[in-house]
Image (cartoon, rainbow, N blue to C red; front, side):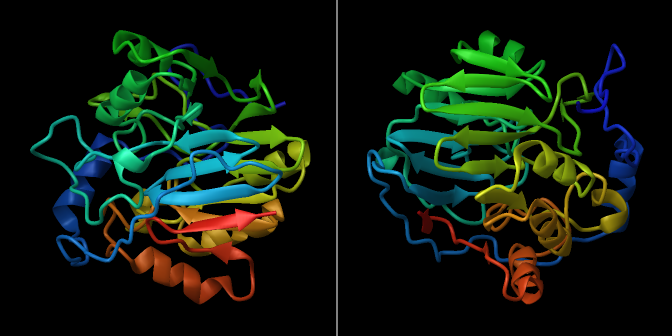
Amino acid sequence: MFPRHFDGKRFYNPDAPQVPGLLDVLHWKLTTRPQPSPSFIEDVEPSIPPRRFEGSGLRITLVNHSTVLLQQRGSNILTDPIWSERTSPLSWIGPRRRRKPGVSWKDLPPIDLVLISHNHYDHLDLPTLRRLAARGDSTFIVPVGVGRLFRAQNIGPVHELDWGGALPLPGFTIHCVPALHFSGRGLRRNRTLWCGYVIECKERLVYFAGDTGFGPHFAWIRERFGSPDLALLPIGAYEPRWFMSPVHMAPEEAVRAHDILAARTSIAIHHGTFQLGDEAIDTSKNQLIACVQERPFLVLNNGQFADIA
């Protein structure tokens, strides 16, 4: 049983460090400077995924940031999709894209299922979600409280899950699992939940961590579900540590999470497209490569894919 994480008004991380508040945000922005990065990097070679990936294998394509296309058993699953130019409620301000998506919109295959980990703008991008809904035939899974926004935008069908909840679907089951993070769009914080997901099917177990700090939930997930065949683990937006450590893992912590999970393969997400922390755009990737050693922990560029038997 996962620990209690709702006090009747707001969600919280049980037995975890306090999430930085708005005064901490102000202090961070006034006292630190991000490492310089190019304004745009023209190194993405887009790929064209198959319309369907048949058979018993799994194809994983990194689109960008935390957007991953998972294709298995003829089904297409998309995580935290964003094709917008900015991670912001406004089109003219906010963190701007530094690399283009690795799959162009016109080449995106039909999407059966969309997993949303929480409501931050880099993970819940309404322009992209409206475009997906307009295509039809997509089901959306969100944490508790986020469904209201989807229904207000006529995005659906949408299913809300709490930690420990599950949704059986043809061919696989989606489990909602804990993450150490927070939620908020604007000034209202923690009125909706944040989470990761475990995708359980006959052939394998896939874990999408969403956005998370390092914590005991990795051990809980392994104990409850077993070791995943694939773990999608975030590595970016980790500096400065005094501010980011409760909610974002550093690359070396992602390696520890990989070890605790005993994942057969891990793939890095949440890096390389938007500069959301103080580290430069590719620092997290380089740090991970330096500390991963012989572990099966892959770093894909936007548009690259990996196949798992």
